[in-house]
Amino acid sequence: MSPTQTPSEPGTDALERRLEQYFDLLGTQLWDRRQRHNFATVAIGLMSSLQRKSLEPIACSFTSDPKEADRLHNRLQNLIADAPWPDHAVRRLATGYALSAMLKRGPILTWICDETSFLKSGDHSVGV
Image (cartoon, rainbow, N blue to C red; front, side):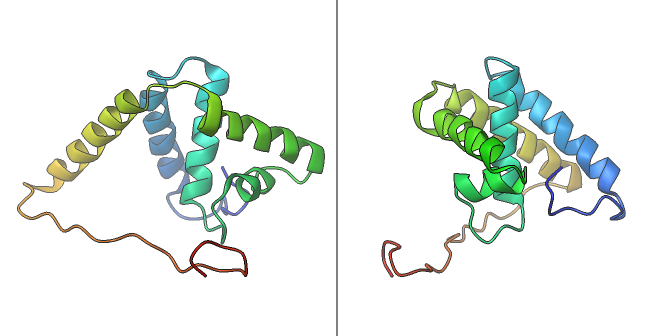
């Protein structure tokens, strides 16, 4: 659980179990415990309420120790930039999981595609 979450929120335990099951499913395609942990850390960071969703703020949100945050940042950077992992297989499982959940509510009658962009901020961001 991210430090930005409140454990007393209603349904948190059920949501955490469901998220854990999802990561366990995706983890079947990843190589080891460390890679699964780093993948889940990045995913939780991207789903969090952090203002900046880059790896450094994500790492810092999981620990208040600057040295540990730096080590975590390096591990996340390695996963994203250098470590080989089967992204096609992970995406296929994630797609199947999402479609299965949607179809439990009823048939898919319409697809709506929406651009998911965000406003740029800062003086040095590309496109500002």
